[in-house]
Image (cartoon, rainbow, N blue to C red):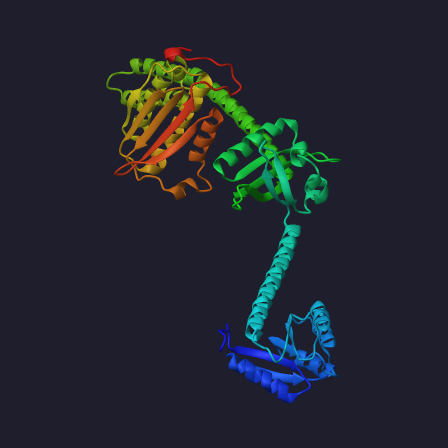
Length: 506
């Protein structure tokens, strides 16, 4: 009865003295359903040549071939590193010889006159050969992947790791790369051999934040991203960033895999940058203070000196005009001079108010905003309506001055760039913040305008508010125009004594 075979193609190498016996066995295999490709050898040299020259699925060997017995054939197969099953088919083999052949590596021994098990043995060996080949391929792939991983790990400027978290919440490391020596001052073997190796290196002040972030990541099964300091043996304190993601291998024990980086240099640079920014902010505040003092001095000079001089000139011109005859041609000229002096007095007063608005100090921020809106309207011809001015706002002198200056700058930008027909201003208090909105119906502002290298007006507003601890938002209006929203805290110190303006009183 023909056997059910998995694949009909079969390449068989026969070790047999008799050509007739080889043909008989080949015919038997054909009867079993195999399409046989066969070759017969009878010497060790012929066997060696056949193994080198072709690929075989099976070796069928007679036990007592004079030029190449079974034991010699098995040795040659092992030396060739070819995984080819050998089956002994012979009538002249006793039990002891069969055991010796099996111990030497033969897969089975069959009586050549009783081949009922031949197909089953062949299919079993083909199956097991495929399994061995697949297992070797998998092992080779694992070795390649491991070598690739080790090469990558050796070139990553950080320590790769794999860890689990114990029931007590402590990290237990399963693997760390060799970069542990460079990062943490100990070899991978020493690090893995220590209990709580990482926790022991974290400075005490940073351990709570580490465990807090670890518990949060565990609860959410999310990425752990922690920065902290470690005290490396024989070295200074280092800043590290530990980042890892969680994986569930299906056994109920989560695995965390990730990398640790040395971020000491970036932390040092960050601290230096913060220090530099703080120094720049202090310098900016100092310059603003000096600028306000200089404006105050110039405003006093304009008011007291120039203003007084102009008033004196007006009196003198008035006296001169009174002494001229009514019909004198000089009288009209004197009236023109009086008008010019009046304009100069008005201009000097406006400039003095812009430099150091006395109304800001005497009556508060709301009154100063209303007064400047009127000056803006007279100077530019653009109506500037103050719709909501909260006169009960109490704030520090520094905050009031800084917010008033940003308001001035916003109106200046509108007059220069917006091509607006109308401006609306709102001043209000929201919680602990002062909110000043300046809206226009002009052409609007594009995002590209904010990125212009010489866009100092808006940049100056933003920087001044940042110094206050405030913000500036720019919103587009419908159907056109722009709203600038300025926010600042009610109280802020900029190196001056804090004078409150309750209801506008200094």
